[in-house]
Length: 244
Image 1 (tube, rainbow, N blue to C red):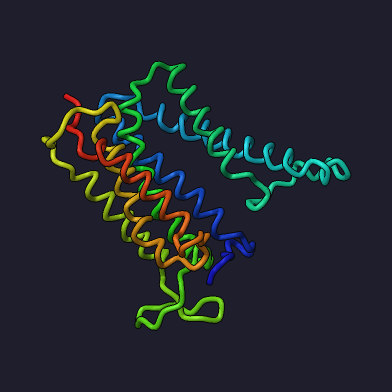
Image 2 (cartoon, rainbow, N blue to C red):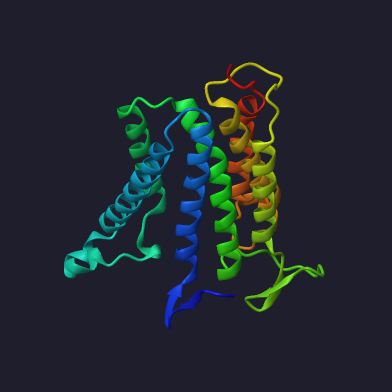
């Protein structure tokens, strides 16, 4: 488990650094793919940074409002930001809304934007899976398999590496998708629907080996139920033909 890294004599948290690297790599790839489709790659960089900043600010505000009585006693603590002191779901929704407003304001073609962002998102998720593995987060269930890793007093599935491999495989499939594809044209474009389907499918398969999942009645994992629903919804878009 590696939670910090020493750089120039300074100990820095590794996972936040890799999260920044994931954002940079995702936007770099998205910008390259956008330029191939005739869209200014700088728009993708700006879109990513606008969405990220909105998500962080929105997530922090939502967290403060959620625990407002505690912050009333120490208002300066509002400006002390830690990854664990963010309301991630509201923040992600706010970031998504900010991104959509940016696309709408500049009249960017939504299909092209989504198609460029989709492979970049897979690359970023792969880096985040590596970050989880190094930090010991999103850990797997105990196992006796020879490739198990020692973590939290038990030998466990390296489920983060399973996800890493699945995301890189999905990235390869999306980037190598044939120019001609069976099915009907889809407003989501040729990459976004397939990306969403493949990612949901990987979560459906490999979350069975997660050791920190929310288990519902009957032994079902909440993440797998959500992944199954998303995979079924994304399947028609994944099979759609590229726009012509």
